[in-house]
Image (cartoon, rainbow, N blue to C red; front, side):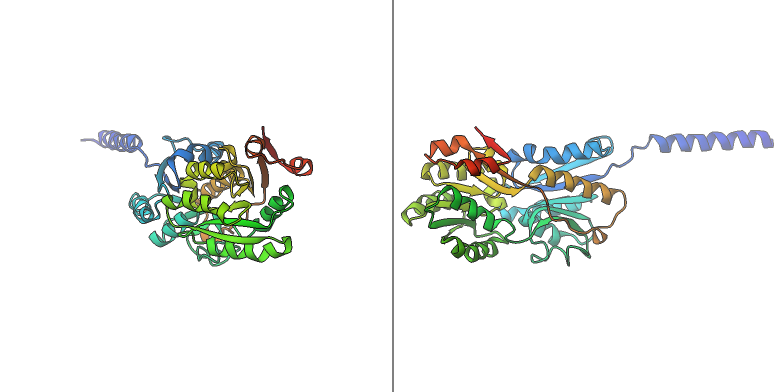
Length: 325
């Protein structure tokens, strides 16, 4: 075989190899996320997915999502996160303290973006906000950020308010700290805090209905994934009690709760997508400062106020970012 034929044969072989490689499907990165409830995910995660699309990620083309839902059952979390680790996800998004704790315990290699958490340093998710130092970064509140303001708002709409029930989940990582923050702020408002510990779904109705018997005039719901998973039950029982209640996020108010003073969830999920994008571009979580959400929203459901016979003062209504009529 002359040299010309050898060269032609070599070119043809190289072309065949190149073509075969081009036809091999590229493995697209998987983003696993651990969320409280499948029923609520569509609303809450829309902002995350919208932002990912804005950043150029198209599901099925250059990104894949692996959702896992724990439906208020904390014991399921280790198994759900372990499954995402086995899939070798490029990033795990952990929503809430419970999911963040499970993700932290499951892997030290896969990058984790936390969001909707409380006090990431105190809970041991990161070494510090400025220098996380491991495989975890994202967004966090600091304990008690908004507790005092929520009590002030309850006092404004109920001037004679003297006793507030603090409804909390016994499995929550931050409930005790938030209860203490509430108890520390309450005396300046001439309010007493009544601790109402919930130990499971069957306990929700019992504790809410018993609140009135303990001379509780209003409720404050401690934010947790457990309550999120049982949101409908919580709102139903609160409605039956006719107790004015302030919640830790807007979902409750949009579903019939009275009011919320909390960080803007839509903004937080959009910022979560920004963190995921930076990690996919090569940034290391250890070098990405943990961010405290800055946008706060005050929402009132006026329909609910009328149903329980509560008049919201005009000066309070005027300060609301959104009023549901």
